[in-house]
Amino acid sequence: MYTIEKNCSLRDKNSFGVEASARRLIRFDGVADLPAVFSEMGKAERWMVLGGGNNILFTSDYDGTLLQPTDQSMVVCSEDEQSVRVRIGAGVEWDDFVAWCVAHGWGGVENLSLIPGKVGAAPVQNIGAYGAEAKDTIDRVECYFPEQDQTGMLTNAECRFGYRDSIFKRELKGRAVILSVEFLLSRRPQFKLRYGDVADRVETLGGVSLEHIRRAVIDIRQSKLPDPKKLGNAGSFFKNPVVSQQKADALRADYPGMPCYPAGAGEVKLAAGWLIDRCGLRGKRWGAVGVHDRQALVLVNFGGATGRDVVDAAARVRAEVSCRFGVDIEMEVNIV
Ligand code: EPU
Image 1 (cartoon, protein in one colour):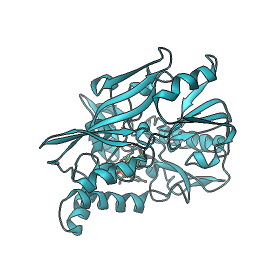
Image 2 (cartoon, protein in one colour):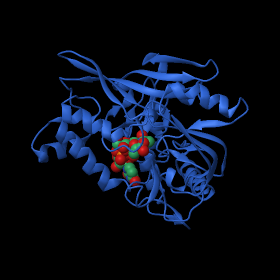
Image 3 (cartoon, rainbow, N blue to C red):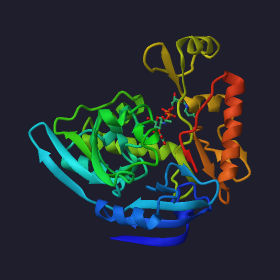
């Protein structure tokens, strides 16, 4: 079953809370609906999938159709002593899935607790936090390809995951609708405590377990990141930039405390939040848009900002970082 809403307001469908509308919003249950949905739309219609609207910024009305999956299924496909394979519908709230895994004692996604958004969006930008990424547990992604009117499975390798990146942001952009995601979870979890704050908090909670990691991550996130229900935002607005070892060494000579993370041969990842902070921009406000005062990587809407206002603020932040450090920071949020 699918439903069509015309001239749909997007204000409560994007976590920035900016005002915009879409010509049409179609909610669909599963793949059985999609041939009819696409034939209803016609070949010329512009379309995109809208998950929870947590990583998207509308700078104008959307003159096309937004597709929203509503599949809420969470199914165990197979299990053995070591692992459990589950298939999760694209419309499931990501953190509900994480809570379900932790409650069953299945490890792999606990470090990704409280990331806002839907399961169907997780592979697109390969969500990550506290030393874990969605790609570590995603085994296959089930998609519908409207051009061929076919469904297919992409293996983990075929998804070509990278840092906040995948084939869904590249070759398959606008060509695939994610229907469900299969995850391989572990009954003998390898706890990831590389992040100092997580390890410390887990210790205070009484030692390492899936529940304690989840609790620790939730506490840390709630202390640093604004709740989009109270203050419009889309989590990290920028990606952490990757620079050459040479560039990182030169910056480190000037700023010995600068955080650096290894990022493959001859490359180093810098912390965009740190760079923005060192530009003196943490807590800075331009009208209705500002840089969050506890995490400089996050831009917030204090109320009434348009998508354009947010993009303008982002451009200023980018320009200041580039001017001060000679580093270009790319946006993580999708601008529509
Ligand atoms: N820092 C500052 N000032 C700031 C922010 C950060 O000095 O205002 C420094 C921190 O002290 C730390 C370093 O920068 O030394 C990195 O900061 P943090 O550990 O908070 O992580 P991040 O790089 O800012 C990334 C993800 C987050 C994820 C955290 C934790 C990206 C773009 N962001 O942030 O993901 O939760 O790591 O793993 O990779 C998201 O994508 O929406 C998101 C929140």
